[in-house]
Amino acid sequence: AQSVTQPDIHITVSEGASLELRCNYSYGATPYLFWYVQSPGQGLQLLLKYFSGDTLVQGIKGFEAEFKRSQSSFNLRKPSVHWSDAAEYFCAVGRRPGNQFYFGTGTSLTVIP
Amino acid sequence: DTAVSQTPKYLVTQMGNDKSIKCEQNLGHDTMYWYKQDSKKFLKIMFSYNNKELIINETVPNRFSPKSPDKAHLNLHINSLELGDSAVYFCASSPGGTPYEQYFGPGTRLTVT
Image (cartoon, rainbow over all chains, first blue to last red; front, side):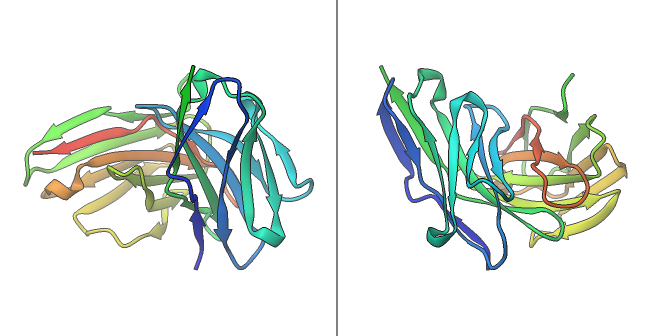
């Protein structure tokens, strides 16, 4: 069965510090992986995606993620966090057919000045 | 232009009532989805339609009935509302086929009293 695990429920970082959010997936075939961000009271916005090719993918807002097949991981990183990055972050794996998404439970990010 | 829109944004109603949430996308996508986000932020897919045809129907009470009058609209009707139906409901859309990212609406916060 497909599943997505985000081990960190809540992370607090200082503004300007680096960030890494962890995501592990369980999927029998080639995964289609996504990171979404949800600001308070808002819908989900796509940060980046991985389908194939280069395992380091760049996204919006200065985020990047690295796909590691051997570790079944797709961790999200940002070198310098801004206060506006405080939000909920969701990792997701997409499955054929039907493009069904399985979401992780989310990681809540707090940024302190 | 709003890509995926939902109405209403907030819905407060009493147990036993019937209510509908509407979703429209102007992206020309073939596939639309309904998700439920519970109080712990967990996102779970409920339904998916492709070109007005139901393709994903997760285990949800049959009080929930999706209706897709055309490719651009997917409405969610809920009969006999229960307290446990209180949640945020998100509509999403994606181009046909897989894999593709999904574009989310702003959500409808349903509160059942």
